[in-house]
Length: 476
Image (cartoon, rainbow, N blue to C red; front, side):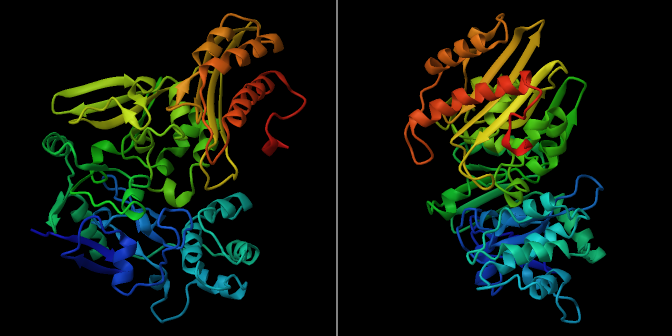
């Protein structure tokens, strides 16, 4: 039976019936004639499909609007939400939206293919009063202009007035009611279960261990859009309030499994500024508005940006099933290349990150060919403690140097108890050579990765000992 998906599109309630649950929002929009959103890459890199989507409210909180890639959003994910496309920005009198006017007056369009995506990215920017160069560039980092027309687009961004979408109160009330109800339907033999209750999700997981577990979907979605796979069953977790949110104690920061990066960013930055800086380099805003740290962990990629910091900080993952909960260190959870210790009936419930003591230095790094929208060649996270000139704490974790993110235990042993000097650093770098086993591939050769991994230890030394020159180029 098809219960379908209900959401608000450009201010009007919409009911989608008879459409398979693995259809993306972008595919449906274009099939229905909403063709402003374009498909440029089908993997969240180009931004041509950008739309605004409301967040599911937590309790009685106000809805927030965020830019997302429609090519990676499945139709079940928009159930109970509101979506605005470039067509929906038009004023009631038919006039252009201030973003559209600013782009036109600054000559911010050329061939026009990317323009609707840029329009929606700037519409998201106009929700915030911040017009700093950093905010502007971050807002459009997930959009590519094939005509290299970025200068007038940035000029349009500088001129944007503030704006807030208006949603009819009756429609908002309807959406709030929909978010409180579980969603389940089957079309063409494909089934989706999107519960609002954790026990219901765990029961479905136990009965259907082969179902695709969907949180943000920013990585898993590529199996649909690029590999053209067709999941028989999808367990969508984004509607479960118990799995979303940031919880803090004096000693721990805990992130619910479906908490998107954007909602965890402030807390992670407060925990360690370099961690916040690293998170800002995970893809672009459209991806961070959907993607989750738990999803990054569950994917278990050796180049997952979030994993080295979790390992270095001694984070633990909370797993749940109908049998109960268990807690594992993150470094034990990832068992091999895209392999984890997750049992067939388990789900990731949350990630617990110990707050480092003030005397520890936390340093996170991502080395890639581009600052934005790129995959790491090598990533690293270091937690270092030095007292009276000797190393008392050393946790060194790397990505991109083995079949999984891993600690450099040999280098750690070479540092512990030793003076924090150049000689001690060189001993750690020598031991590091036996800790890692990088491979040659498109993002870098094994030799390059070995050199980068060692050079990051040099940077750590400079960060903690030098006061006359910055250790990072961006600090110049």
